[in-house]
Length: 171
Image 1 (cartoon, one colour):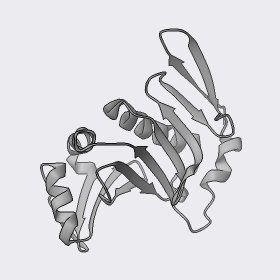
Image 2 (tube, one colour; image 1 turned 180 degrees about the horizontal axis):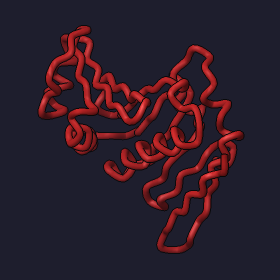
Image 3 (tube, helix red, strand yellow; image 1 turned 135 degrees about the vertical axis):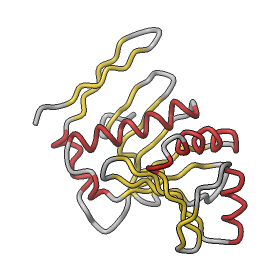
C-alpha cells in the first residue's frame, strides 16, 4: 500500500507531512487498551459545536443512558445534565470506527476508540478526518493518545497551521 501524503497550507508556508502506515501501525495493535482523542481547555461552547456536528449525522450517533439506547438530546447541556445522575455515552460511528464520549468534564473533550478498528491506511485516514473535524470545529489542538495517558501522544492536529503530525515527528 502506498503512503498517503497530507498537505497542510498556512499563511507562511506549505508543509508536507507523510503518514507512513508501517511506522504508525504498531499504535493500533491490540494490547487490551483503548486509544483516546483529547481536546484540552474546552468550554461548553466548544462542546456545543462538537455536539451540533455529531447531531448533523444522527444515523451515525447513538446515545446510551444506563445501558439503554435513547434519542440523543438536542443540546450538549442536556447530555451533561443526564450524566450527573446516570452513566451516559455518546457513540459516533464512522465506517467501522466507533468514537465514544462519556461527558466527564466541560473542560476537556475526550473520545475513546478501539485500536482494532484501524487496520490500514484507509482507516487511519478516516481517523485523521475525524480528528481534523474536531480541531477545526473548536479551533483547538487535538491529540490522539494511548488510553488514560494524555501526554503519550501518537498524533496531533494543529488547527492554526492545519498540520497533522504522527509520532515520532512530534516536538
